[in-house]
Length: 138
Image (cartoon, rainbow, N blue to C red; front, side, top):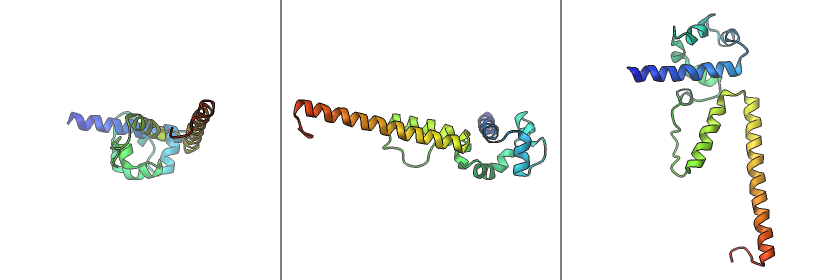
């Protein structure tokens, strides 16, 4: 029973953080979803866990899957990913609490940064080969 309460608390926290990230107020969220006033306040105070019945709808609204709301690990095969790749993936998944515009900026920044590092590395490698007179594969 204790584990169920911990799971509910994690989900409650996740849902509330998404509401805070995407809506100016609890009332704005309640209006958008069409739920009664003070519903989110009751969630915050632990007086209600009605959000559990709404997980599919909440997942759709926040553009995540239900597993992410429940903080369930990825179910796809990740056996070929390194620990570093899994860590980056986990960090990126945490960004789902951010508004989509900010997530888009984060993705662009990541893509540009990684591309810059790869390009710089390849240029340094090519210059080193030129200086030593070695060709690729030697």
